Image (tube, rainbow, N blue to C red; front, side):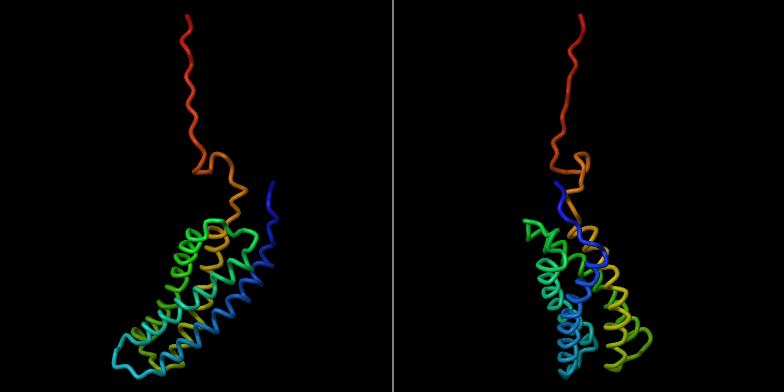
Amino acid sequence: MRTRQPSVLAQLAKFAAVGGVGLIVDVGLFNLLLLHPSQSAAWPMIAKSASTVCAIAVNWMGSRWWTFREQRRSDAAREGLEFLVASLLGSGVALACLGVSHYLLAFTTPVADNVSANVVGLIAGSAVRFAAYRSWVFADRSARGPSQSSATPKVTTTVAPTP
């Protein structure tokens, strides 16, 4: 029996809505942390990392309970770990954009930090995340054949010698 698979467009719309809530958490917390006076040259990266972790938690809940509801797994801990890895991969794209802009190109204003991390990085990182969530974290496991399942035991047969 095959589970009902939602269309890519429906999932993409839900993904965008959940991501919008995560974006509000991420950008809001990032800017709140940037207001904190710090002498550390790494403060923008620290602030972005902290806001990203909070947004990942919000996004996992929304993705698990709404966007990919039909594909969520009973092993929530493993699903959560895979979601975290996929999210960090996508977030690494945003951090790389921020790092290049802030440290390599010397665009160090809060506006420049926001554009690089929360516009350019968000678009590129979101594409990476959606692909990883759909194809790995919340992949339709019911479509796996017996040869693709890691839980399928190997069967060995022996042929008796003929007299």
